[in-house]
Length: 243
Image (cartoon, rainbow, N blue to C red; front, side):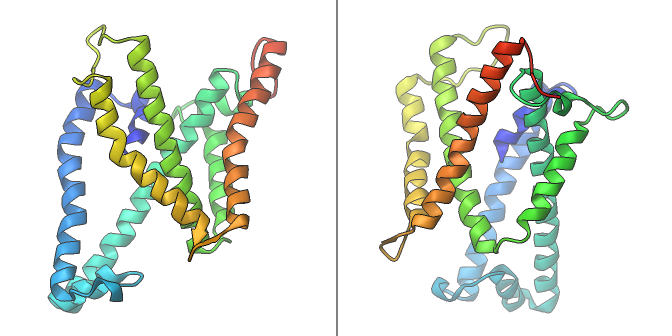
């Protein structure tokens, strides 16, 4: 979720200073939040094949009794609420930026006069997220995981594009201190995970899931098709052509 920092950078006071400090705390905390509960759960019950949904709560109960189990469940609820808020924050800014560039409806570029938030994007995002509640959790997890991992490929592609276009930091900006080969080595494990996730989503017990493939294809095609449509309309009208 660290890529969501960029879309809200304009609304952060002194992001060049605030983000590195926040990341210095967040990265080790996130790593420990994965490692420590997993390690403790393995100690409580070494056979991970018996783990199921919400197993961290079960493991916490085994380790520290009902009080720790309740605390773990409460922590999970708070964590999910925070993830939802961060997702709404980031996704609501994307249509706003697209509207500013003439690639989406102009109404999505309007901001609240007092808070500066994109009202149309927030309302639409709330409606879409509410409708998604009708899907099964396994369906949502499958769709989200594939879309999310492929979005990282776009981020990596943008990194290589920026490196080739502007090889120097310029104006005090930040530059990852490795060459193109170093960047390739850095992203190689993530690319391998992308291949595994996509393969797992499309094949179940060795059987190709055609329905899932069509759904994924429709999701992936929606972006390029929308981009080409709005770009063509914008070129004809000189700006975002729709209200």
